[in-house]
Amino acid sequence: MPTIECDADAARERLREAGVAVDPGNTDHERWRASHGGATAVAYDGKVVVQGRTPARLVGLLEGGGGRAHVYFDGAARGNPGPASVGWVIVTGDGIVAEGGERIGRATNNQAEYEALVRALEVAADYGFDTVEIRGDSQLVVKQVTGAWNTNDPDLREKRVRVREILERFDDWSLSHVPREINDRADHLANEALDDRGS
Image (cartoon, rainbow, N blue to C red; front, side, top):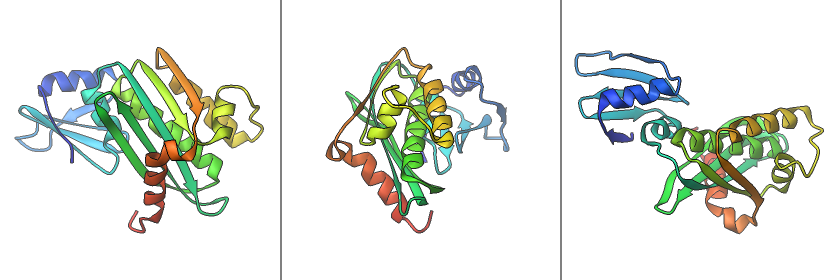
């Protein structure tokens, strides 16, 4: 459960400016509550506690601040289609800012790769990064998003449109294909989520 030391009123305004609905707290000690991206923030005097299985996007909105980030993404599917998951990592000069891995239900490997990119970019955008350098080991996703290859599959075409919409939130971006060993942390998170029977 991430705890962010901050001014609760300033944090509330930051969320409202991002279009997140902020509700009154449920107890005398809670200043306010807000839900976004699969998590809930609860504000107290001097801090905000973020609860939920996927807190990264909400934490990003509360802590964001611009700059450049390196974004790594990977999807995994057992069977094609089959049980699928995503993994992603956001890194700056200070180290890993955020990372995540989760099951996404049944999908093809290409659908999982696209979904991993969408999730990673949503978090990077919520953190407020100005520039993202994106790396993944899916040549298909890289070539389709950059326009080098056509996207004939309707589902992948829809996902490519979503990726391009999120990319418009950044001042600058690049997307490049890297070998799997360069993308090992995202790959590990995707496979760990897929192996986790409790998810």
